[in-house]
Length: 186
Image 1: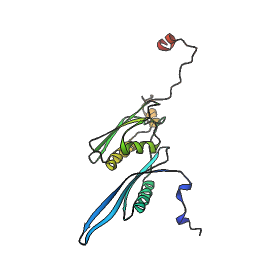
Image 2 (image 1 turned 60 degrees about the horizontal axis):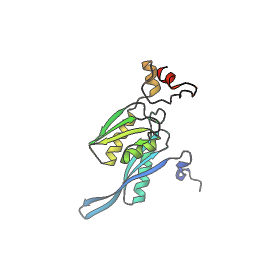
Image 3 (image 1 turned 90 degrees about the vertical axis):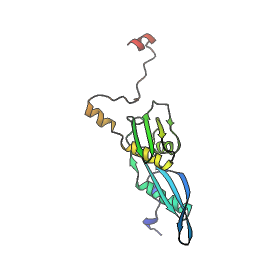
Image 4 (image 1 turned 60 degrees about the vertical axis):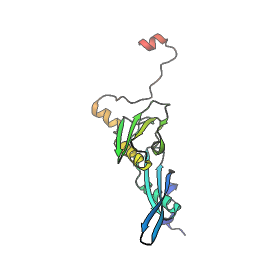
C-alpha cells in the first residue's frame, strides 16, 4: 500500500515532541458526565523553529496525536543571535506575563516549567526567563511564544541603525603574548 496520505511526515525533518501536560476533562451533559482528555505538546527542531498545540480527544493517545499535528502546523521561526535572543522582550497572554533576556555564552537556559521546554525546543542555549503572575503552563508558554514572535531581526536592526547592538557576541579573545596591562589599558 503506497498511499502518500499515510506516509510518515517526520522523515524529512526531525522534530522533538514533548508532552507538557495531559488533563482529564469532564463535560456535564444531560445523561451524566462525558470524559475526555486534553493534551498540551511543544514541538521544535532545535534550530529556531518551534510550535505548540493543544487538543482534546476521548483517548490519551488520540489527544496527543492531534496536539502534535496542531503544533507542527503552528510552527514558527524565531530570530536568534549566537544561541540567544537579540534583545530583552516581555509579553503577556491572559494572566500570564513572561520576561525574556539574552544571556552570555555558557549561562544556559534559566527558566521554569513549560517556558524552559519551549526555549530549549526552539534551540536557544543562553537565555534567562521569568514567568510572573500565572503558573498555568499553557498561558505561560503562549506568552513566551508571543514574546519570541516579537523579537526583531538583529541584522536588519544593525543596518537600520548603522551601529552594532548590545548583544552578547562571540568576541575574539586577546592573544597570550599581550601582558595584562596592555589588555586592560589598550
